[in-house]
Length: 109
Image (cartoon, rainbow, N blue to C red; front, side):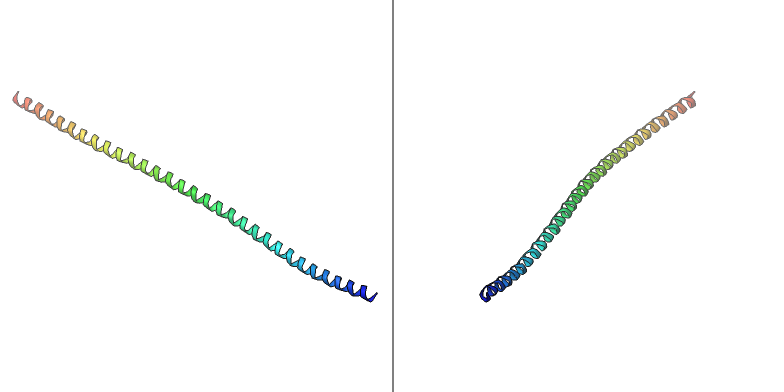
């Protein structure tokens, strides 16, 4: 009977040790799962940041394209204004010449 009790105590001690090892393994598993969740969250935030960065780059490119378009239109308008001012100067010069000719004709008459 003492021999059986000794075996039972040894088995109980082994069971306690196995339970301790199992507790350590479960704690490590929980820690590993927590790290995986943190890693997944980090990757999600990274993907969101990359997406935001890409959207910002697209927006900036679109803005630069729009600014180039506006600058080109403004340059066209300046060119048109310069051309119209030159035409107006030319017409004024023609009118002045016509007035002078008319005045000269009136003076001769």
